[in-house]
Image (cartoon, rainbow, N blue to C red; front, side, top):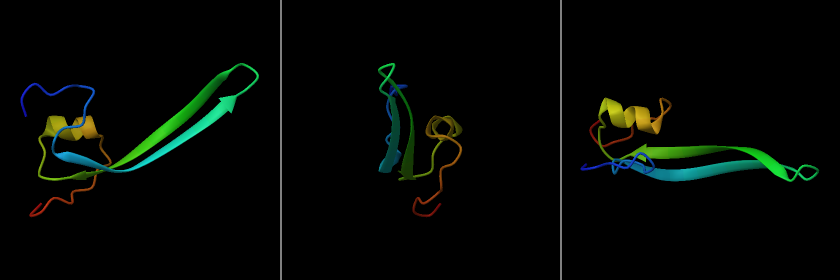
Length: 64
């Protein structure tokens, strides 16, 4: 993994499901929201990659 971007998932992670929840405030023309992304690891990851993906990942890599 050369020159990883801090705004991209590492190549060892594949997004499987996105949940996006938006709550509009039509009086003030703003919204709040939250997102949840479920990831699958395609191989064992480094501690740095684990931190980038968050601490709630599940190890489903082959042989892991």
